[in-house]
Amino acid sequence: MFDRLLEFDRSITLALNGSDSIVMDKLMMIVTSTIVWIPMGLFLLYIIYRYKGLKTTILVFGGIMLCVFFADMVAAGIIKPLVGRLRPSNEPMLIDKIDLVNNYRGGWYGFFSCHAANTMSVAVFLSLLLHRWSIALLLVLWSLLNCWSRLYLGVHYMGDILVGLMWGAIVGWSIYMIMRRSIGSMQEISVRPANTAILITFAVIVVMVPILAT
Image (cartoon, rainbow, N blue to C red; front, side, top):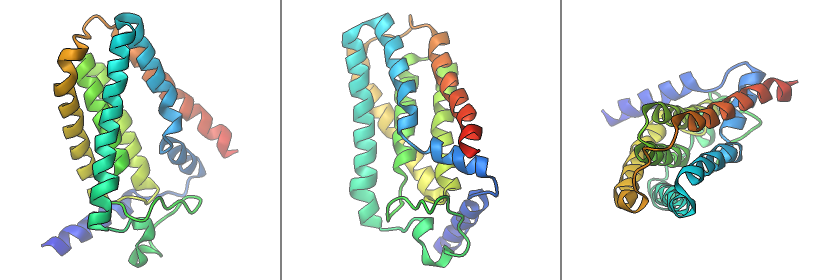
């Protein structure tokens, strides 16, 4: 039963891995980079600062850092070395099947995905704080886009991603429950600039891809 599950996991991963498109290769390498999303995060923090002031902004930033810390610490510091599951990009039996981009392989072990855990923890934390369905949708899409990039690049199995998403959601919800009274209500924050910040980031990435691919 477990062997069948692993084979199913490999099959889904290979189906979602790679393409013959240089543009898609460039897009996924950009999406998977943490640094490209920093402006979006800074703009969201600026919006919170405008409406709620410095103290609340610092608390929100601290909550985000706690989300990433606990999501990443468990994934990278405990589970990956403990389980020791090779990434698809490092798996000898998949060496002729996996499609790599610029020979990018990630680290040695892949279970479970830090990208999935980190992004989903932040998405859940901010979604619960801001309490707007449109922001929540965009933040979850941002997390899933990051997850897709990891599958596309062949550095994670689908199982790595799913477990990472579940752990990230637990971490984000937990940090929110701990900090919600300290941070207070975010109801007065306008949804439009927050959504605009996320959508502009998506648009800039899409525009950058064809330029970099030439």
